[in-house]
Length: 354
Image 1 (spheres, one colour):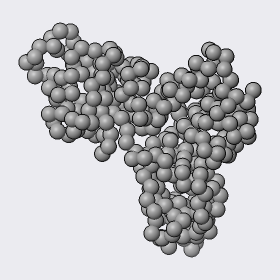
Image 2 (cartoon, one colour):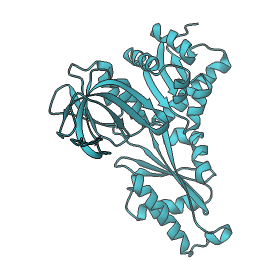
Image 3 (cartoon, one colour):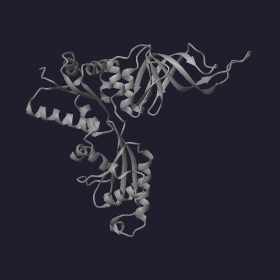
Image 4 (spheres, one colour):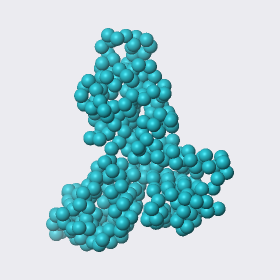
């Protein structure tokens, strides 16, 4: 999440969400009566004196709306904010009419609450650090897949194929492998951010040869590229094998994904030992939250299929207001599926409440 103070008001911030986690954070922050300023588009119809209005023309406009409702569309990674237009920079767009903003990753909005922000809101807004991500490359001599891990979310780019098979590709002077490496390097360069790190893995020597090729291109500094052993699968399958492996926890130890994975492992260990310092499902987590017993909570998008979105938001804000950490995951990773199978929400407790 990119956050900067707005010069128009001490209660306003410029915000740019960078991943699905950020969109859900905005869903928890944006409340009724807040003012949201954003660039959008709206259909304007010209009314003729003796005829029906025409089909209208879609115009770009910057509006300020007073929020009436916000809801998350997790299926398309979009936050929809509806409200009444209070200000506009286009005289063809009427004030006082209803409008709906669709906020996606990369969109910039300004949030002005018109009052002092609550401490928990500021904490949520600024907790995501430098916004760095990890670029994963699962490669062998025949195929490679590239994925970007942002927070706890994974976006996989389809496989890149070398076009050759067998031992022919292992000859040192084969010029085609340079083309193959160039295609992969271009894919990495197209998605890498300023502070992102690259992790390369896979069977054979292709991973080390690609490491040298990527560094030689000087598009990624050597200290931001790491070769990892222990994952002998390439392509898209290799990405998901790596995300379930001990190598992930070591190579990405500072990431939210590794933190969530370790937390779930602790819960499973407690289950096997018969310990009760955990809670699963909305009912158990709500009871633990009422007793201020939660240390950290992880939830998946599946929770919205069984619980009201507003209820979930209030619960999470209450938990974080008491000093606990919260993490959102989705079905793009094995971790998200694990959380979904445990009731959609799991919490580690400071003490047993059962």
